[in-house]
Picture 1 (cartoon, one colour):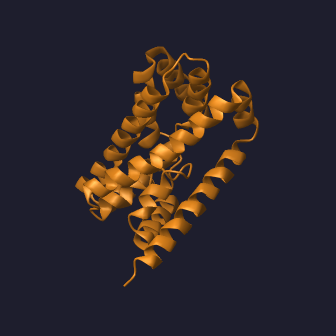
Picture 2: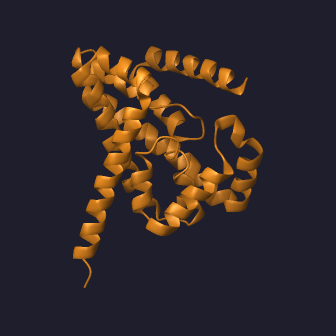
Picture 3: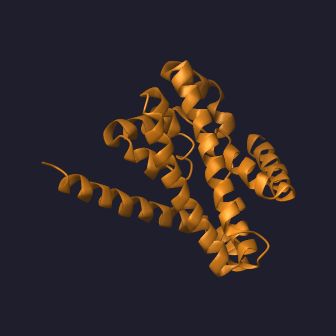
Length: 209
């Protein structure tokens, strides 16, 4: 029942996104970066197709996507910062099932942030179902806002470019591929995380005194 309602709501949001154009992309990515489980793939891959046909501007789509991702992430960051960890955990325990957010997922994102710090905010943006949660521990631990915005923007920018590129170069075929093989995109995003994290560790090691 919950899944059917979410599917229907997702369809309504998607119709609104395309009706509003660039502003719709901004709204859609804001929703995607907050609590609602709204996949960015169903916005950005088709947008990439439209860019290849000259119907959309890459710059404006990219800008709308980044700004929307930042606003959605800031919503979660602010909630966590203002009401605190215990209150957020209580809300997730009570209402998380309606948004497919579990207490286990919340605790996992918290442990990841504790272990890896700021870089986890960037990497978390590349992992489906984690990108919404990773902003919460950043708020719990009062991560500096400028760092939070920077790492969030970098992660969102990489993910946006990847999805727009898929749509641009593979056109309508890319939409079909995503529908039939969503795990392929998740595997690629995981690979991106490994590459970025490896680069981060190398740089960190080089900068050690």
